[in-house]
Image (tube, rainbow over all chains, first blue to last red; front, side, top):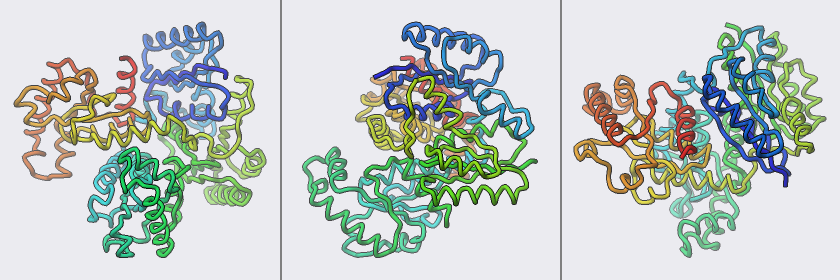
Length: 267
Length: 267
């Protein structure tokens, strides 16, 4: 397998440039080794970054890929003297966009993620809400939720809720379906009155068995037979209520969240 | 203020294209309204996407900005018939990268975030770890942590820990500094033995007062005077131990996380 070094260099967090580096997964035949150089926002750090890239280029014998989000033109020029393939977000994206919008872009450091405005505050609120409504911890306040994820224990509700809150500022509660719910055949009143906010998650029994076994090996709870039965009952219940659900077995929390967000936005 | 409609259109989650849309914050004189069209992965959805963009272009009287990550060439061509300014991640990034790497890129849907490989598993492990070690919930297992965030209650430890876990797969524990710690003048043994993993957070008293007052208005806990004293004691303690710390008052969790990650990587 080929190998290529990658640098994420930014005058801010490097999050946008880092997100773009996910596009490297379109090239599965190359193994990429990534170095992050955030907060590269003065002459000294720029010089150190230049030397770092140059050194790796020499060691590798092939030029690294540099994804760069640096607002200062002199700093960009200095970095570009290194022997590398540059993906310069300013030249490829921000300046062309400026022409389209007929505006000069801000070029200060850390523009994208320094915003502490309303949307940031909403995201922090959503994270607090989600942590306080994790795993059916409390049913009060569900009226405030934008979505309530349900499903059997360990099917992926918690990380998905948190991702929704963190990335999109969605107040996501979650409620685990447990044997009592199956016996009763209905949700508790606080959930039932918010039935239109529910999104279900399910999972393949083999996968659930494996996930639960990591936490409680050889338990009844983790046994394949119990996993099968719980999932069957949960799916029957969701079907009876007409709840939309998704299988988390082969979906990442990012994919699940995008599905759920789409569903919420449609309402 | 100008207004511009923005579409994030993807055959997958749209997360990469969405991350790129953060660069629009370099243009503060325009108000952007964003519509996400994830999972646009068949002829029907592509046609619906095309019509949606076209309709908004007509309504706005100015062409929308479309950030597009769609692997199928025919789908891209159909979408590009809409009256819009296109930022096509395949043409701007992936194909040029393919030339550099001398490889054909994968063009299937949802490449970037469908990966359920080792790094995904690590991230999920890290999230579980972080949730189980939030707010000093348990001191056992701190040996396993990669970083332990400390600071007074409500200074931003929890959302920052979770962000570190979710985005970077870092096992981040956190430990709140409380009056008992100040009286004792030292950390509990389990924290003390992991002193080299500690990263401190601090906050301005006025901001802490405001954050705490939202939760417990008019309490001693939230009073400006108490906030001032707690922060002073916490900073003294961190100074005495030689702990690196950052002020969360005007930094987003993304900025704090990038700082912490940099510190961890230096070790």
